[in-house]
Image (cartoon, rainbow, N blue to C red; front, side, top):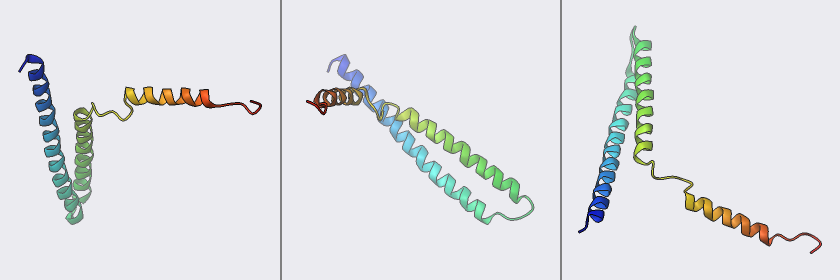
Length: 104
């Protein structure tokens, strides 16, 4: 196995490790948010507003972190890739060539 194949294999394993860690992070986030939402449901007493604001702050902060983590892991997954843009440009050029005017 040459060094190029080894490097590709190493990159693939590293990417899979990042995806696995993201899914573990996502599972922990779901459990944590579920517990905090339950806490919002059962909270009572004189410090109710403080506890609610703390819980909501934690949910918002962790949501931002999970989104940033997901974007970092899946950044290579672009919606509009260069090949898609090239293909659409070719389709528009062909459509322009096919158009005829009314008097032709």
